[in-house]
Structure formats: C-alpha cells, structure tokens
Image (spheres, helix red, strand yellow):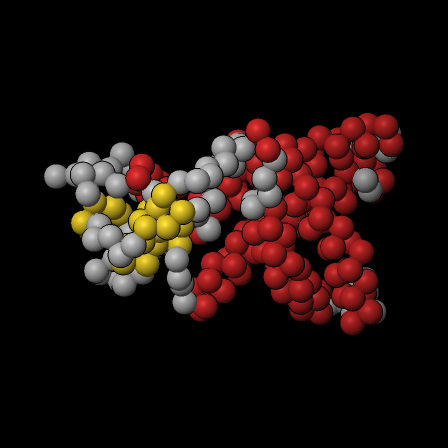
Length: 225
C-alpha cells in the first residue's frame, strides 16, 4: 500500500496539463478575493496611521516620523502575510512549489502588495469618487454600494497580480527544476490530467491534485519540462 506523507507531495511535483476554464476562473477569483482582503486590511491600517484624527482620538498629536515608521512596519507585516498566503494558494491552486520561502515573504509578497495598493489608490479610488461624488455625506447604504463596487473593481486586478508574482523566478533564490522528465497521467475518478515528476510517484501510485484520490499511474507518455 503506497504511503503519502501529505497531499502537498504530489501537488508540489505535478503540473496541470488541462483544466476547465470555469474551474480556473473560480480559482482566479477566489485568489483575487483573498488578496483583496489583505490589501483592504493594509489600506485601513495605513489610513488610520496617517490620519491626525486617529491620534487626536487617543489624546495625542500626530508625529509624522513615528507615523512613517509605523506605516513602513505595517507594509512589511502585510507584505510578508501576502507572500505567505500567496505561497499557500500557489501550491494548492497553481502547482507553484519551487519558490523560495524568503523570496515569497520579502520580495513577491511586498511587491504584489505595493502594486495592488497603487492600483487601489490611483485607479480604483478616483473611479469610485467619480461614480459616488457625495460619498462623504451619503448614508450607509450608499457607502456600502461604493465599497462593494470598489471590491469588485480591484479583485480581478489583485488576482492577476498575485498569479503573476508567484510565477516570478529569482535565480539561485528559487529551486528551479529543469530538465526533469515527467509522466502524463489521467485520474480514473475525475478524468483530470496532470504531469507527474518521478518524486511524485510512490510505489507506482500518485494522488490526483484535482479530487485528492490515489490511483496507479498508467503512463500516457513522458515529457520533459
């Protein structure tokens, strides 16, 4: 009986050969919504740290040097969080597994956060301001509508940025696997086809990345990736 240490073993070492467009779109949007949640969290904290009203509420006066320091700390913290979340989703959704943890935390994550933040501030916000000119004096329902539209506007962009950045390679920082012979196999349960590397095959069996069931690999043909 083949023993698999964890589902991630096959996820790391297999590359998707084909997938329905509807499934890819659903994963893309889900990734985008998760990224949007992180970006919104940073935006809210960033606005609070840079607002004099935040400090006045607690009986103090804004210190711009301290505010800048806290802003930088918040950006780094959310950037690292973004990198870790994208790393996890990249392994589960997009079969990206050879990225360095340090590169994900301190390069890809902060870069994706900065790009998403810039889009939200310089593109999405002006659009929302133009569509909802009376937002400051409007009622709660009006504001909720603006927020929903804002989220729908930035989510596809955040998904695109997230998927793009996790595929960046940084030379020696990442474990790039080249020249590896892989075997194409189709799951008999869900009919999903994947390329499996030798390290993903345990006693002739693999675990389907789509449905999670184990099956004996009947090679359909090798390929070199």
